Image (tube, rainbow over all chains, first blue to last red; front, side):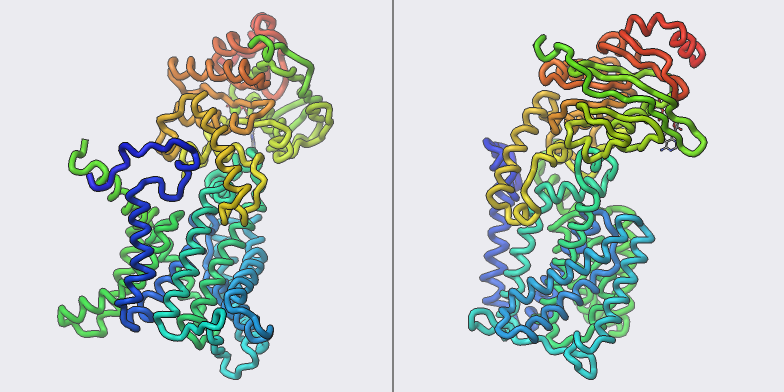
Length: 352
Length: 261
Ligand SMILES: Nc1ncnc2c1ncn2[C@@H]1O[C@H](COP(=O)(O)OP(=O)(O)OP(=O)(O)O)[C@@H](O)[C@H]1O
Ligand SMILES: [Mg+2]
């Protein structure tokens, strides 16, 4: 009886349409935010910040972006990393070429560039779907990375193709230590997750899901399929673009276009699948899981006395098995398992 | 009540509609009209072209010949979106709900044309976006009450039994506050009790909101009971048109039905 919604009546539709209608959930989220913004910065080590938390948050944001497109709008994409690259290199160039450019604005503009590229490469989705769309997004992936590598302007004529992201500074405050960078990333991700939640509970989100589930009916009701799909591509790519910029500015520091390769796209796709298609919480669970798994496995390998070389192979095997498991058994991923757990808890200890 | 039921002028007229799919003639030279506030049934054996007719009326299919006149405006081809904006809503023969969404969200989609805020306002849950969401939710709750769907409000539609799904689909169509409702076999596959419920909902809709209804139905008892006028199709051709009594006594109709059964 820890988790109960009995006795909590919603007396207005405003109450009922809250993001977390159940009081326990609200408390849990408030606690989580306090832990993330206050407790963790007090206690975590630099390694935990830059080795785990920062990549986790950034990848969760990219996962959220892909989840909007694939989970909510039903459009498959293998080009996530390409949109991240556009966001990163566009932000870099805005910082470089526009004097006095505020860094947050550069991130937003980078996201907008990614959104425009997303719309452009989303156009084929109006005619093709499934496998063919996947192939066309794969082309996006290769084309964008090739473009960034081949056109020296994008990397400011750097001979190696590597760029060094500018110092992040907001209103004179410099974000230098891992802890400071973590707080910045956390704030950006928290705000964007909230905006995503608002979108999926409004008409735009319903238009994505309607087109995903039954496009003829969606059209008959009055949704415009083209608008719905292209907004999904734009919003999704915007999220990926901002994530890509954070990846360069707050995580890697120096980046080459190849950092945003197909491998990264696939990793993010796996995060969506494991976390749960069409779930915002799932995007975080999936990213957390995939970031933590290798660390967890190396600890296991260490304590069981197996040779260290086993770790990476073990990682691949566990990944493979998990993906197959989730695809076949639970396409709604960890998020769904979490929900089932909550439903059980609601009835506990009296299952009937 | 009787006020809304007073049958008015012709609001929809189809003239000489022909529709082919490759070599298949789904509809051949069909003409009929629908009057405001009436319940107009379309009947006919399987494959007669009934569903195709509804698809022509709201623009899912484009006929090769003929015109559609809705509220005085003559068109060669109805545009789906325009049909929705002009107050035409419909249900489908094979339930076409959004299976990944809850009942409430499915019905909310029916109100999408009333929502004017942009996705950016919605992302910020700001002023107009928030207000619209709440106003439209209120309207949707009225429909939920009207169709007695309160207990499944938050259930994902995939988990619902067939009869309730059909009702949710009607709710989604009604959410648009349509002036004309196209129902493709709303009672097919239901048991007697569910059929009675659905019949009542259709009649109540017509009574209370004055909605004009074009209805495809196989159950002759239902058709004879609730419709004002009936069109009969067979092999894509119109073989009868009139009041239930006239149609029942039409020799061509009797032949088509005897031939089919
Ligand atoms: N999209 C389509 N493509 C090809 N042929 C079609 C299509 N839609 C309908 N038809 C054909 O048109 C004819 C009429 O079909 P329609 O679905 O309109 O019949 P119906 O009267 O609704 O039948 P039922 O009672 O079985 O629902 C059939 O021969 C059908 O095969
Ligand atoms: Mg049919």
